[in-house]
Length: 188
Image (spheres, rainbow, N blue to C red):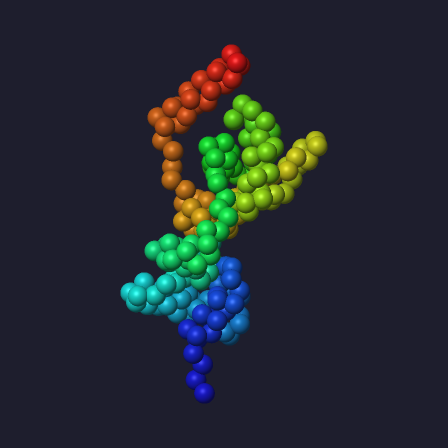
């Protein structure tokens, strides 16, 4: 009986429910990673062309089966409005700093924001957008934070290196806004 590699890959990705590294899939199928990558690319094209509710995404040399964005409304109706994590301005600001500066410590985040960031960092860890990725080799050995695969999925990027660049003009505007915010808070 001839093996159906597409069916095997589909079963792996569906069953695992999270991203699976390319080399793990290749090992399971006893194929070269280049062959598996070619098969997955074919599967991605087939799913995009057909009227299907799923797709396969790539996340830093790993693959995951997930729902197509146009299906979200229907899923929400079925799930009866699942609890949604709300990213406030404070959380988005903190997440942006971590995403662009990673690996980064809380004290570095606080230096950039000008305020304590314990709550924001803890909430982002709870939302699985940020994780502890080690410790800085300095006195006190502060924790280092970075983004997670969940961050990549939610923001639709394959890696942190693919985040949009911030031009110097935008950076200057952000700096001025932060200074104004600090001035307003200190006047209160």
